[in-house]
Image (tube, rainbow, N blue to C red):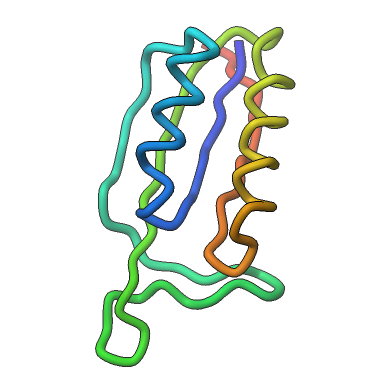
Amino acid sequence: MKAVFISFYQAFYDEVIEVLDRLEIRGFTFWQEVQGRGSETGEPHYGTHAWPTLNSAMLIFMPGEKVPALLAEIDKLDKSAEQQGIHAFVMPVEN
């Protein structure tokens, strides 16, 4: 079992859901409005006048064997709009 945390520009929501449906990954927890900025080149998403966009975040607990396919799909989305950003982080789950 793995935990996958995905942080993404809000406009990616429908695409992320499509990926989860296609890969038959059902359960997740979703935060609609989170703030942040990329560690290297991404634009800030602060919800302010100067930087009005926001990110969203999702936490998925899933079988480890499905993780590589999910990461490949997230990478495709990221490459489609690199300045907006979507990134996934994988963590082991103990219990």
